[in-house]
Length: 278
Ligand SMILES: Cc1cc2nc3c(=O)[nH]c(=O)nc-3n(C[C@H](O)[C@H](O)[C@H](O)COP(=O)(O)O)c2cc1C
Image (cartoon, rainbow, N blue to C red; front, side, top):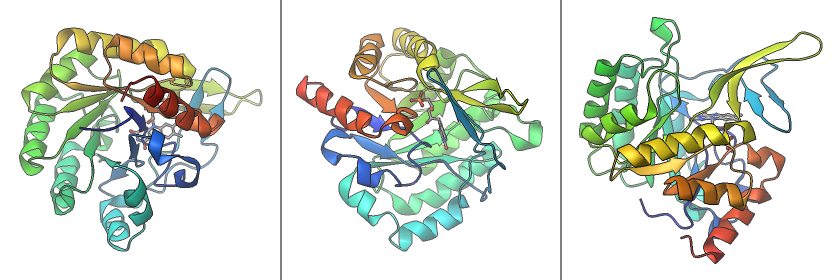
């Protein structure tokens, strides 16, 4: 995947193009859309998010129009401006692995349109009690093989978390199945309680994640050669990005930092370009 600078807008925080007016295409390597699942999802009722200096916790619940609704949106030109300004990564998921395979079939129609297709393997497997779809390793391997066969020639990224499998083991499986890269990490399960007792059990992101994601990048780079690594978690400054490159990342993601100030992404991208990291 050729992106310059090696800075990617993470799936989720930037929605499906909502940050277009705030981001400078010169400094953003690629823009990832929020995950689209096989079936449409209304998402969770509020409260959906809390933020502190150290973390963001969210329980959005993957609100999205479903793959058929998304296809209609693409065809009706909803993303034309985004496509004209940025390289776009589509993020895909489902309630079980057979839905990932179906989504891959549907995306065949858009061959070459996206710089990469990212499969979000942190979605809970709805039928088997909510554990990550990655937990059944043999079934996961078979799904990876089928998707690779379906989407020949596309740059395939797998986004994973730390629940369900060791990242280096997952990266090895991805490489064996001919996938191109891995995004490390998706948010980690977290718990937050407001003073009034309201509990948010959701995905944890932000500065608190950086050492965890850095370790994931470091381990995968050490143990698996020839796989493209996108580091994701707590990149809020240029120095954070450099730490990821030192640990072995090929590119970095900006996620929740966009909530603080969308210009953070432009600024980091500008410094990477200026520093010759392209
Ligand atoms: C509000 C919110 C929504 C998210 N939605 C998605 C999503 O739809 N798909 C996905 O793969 N990751 C999603 N994520 C996870 C981010 O892409 C990223 O992996 C995580 O936030 C860590 O990066 P950060 O610390 O830079 O935010 C979401 C994160 C946040 C904060």
